[in-house]
Image (cartoon, rainbow, N blue to C red; front, top):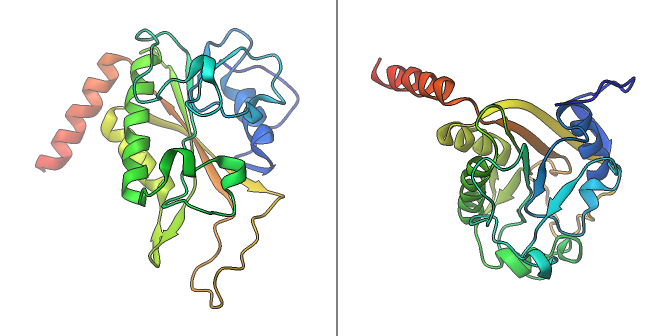
Length: 222
């Protein structure tokens, strides 16, 4: 996968989600790629990739394809790429970003640990759906602060993916031009998390996965 172009692809992207996906797709997708975006929303990821064919589903915005990304109707190994970007704002209610992400419609009342489990279940199902000889799972996430504690979501995603048998292939950082206003706290204790991440995980062949699991078991027993 991937298309040769004169565009240099960097790991840090300035702009919006469409800019990010365009950069990722330059390396990892082409017009023949079978892509499922299982948290499609309004399709903003794909606005700068008109050459790609994407099957979009979303329980909120796609009544014609309102699939739970933890239990998809797709056959095993039916896609080259599955894209996963669940709402990741913990305990959403009248959150300032809810008009954009509709977190309250899907993750209202969830704590960070619940959202992590949501991601884990989604990655497990995505791994089933992508092909077993190098199919990819693209996962968007963002670090947060909950109850005064740093929550390093991008590190947790890598750990959970490895435990599922997915291999980290690449990591992109999105630095947005638009910023959410921060007027909630009078005293600042942590750097504001304005950037987000997109992991490219790969499902290895069964033989490679078995070797990885044996090596992991050996590391545990040492």
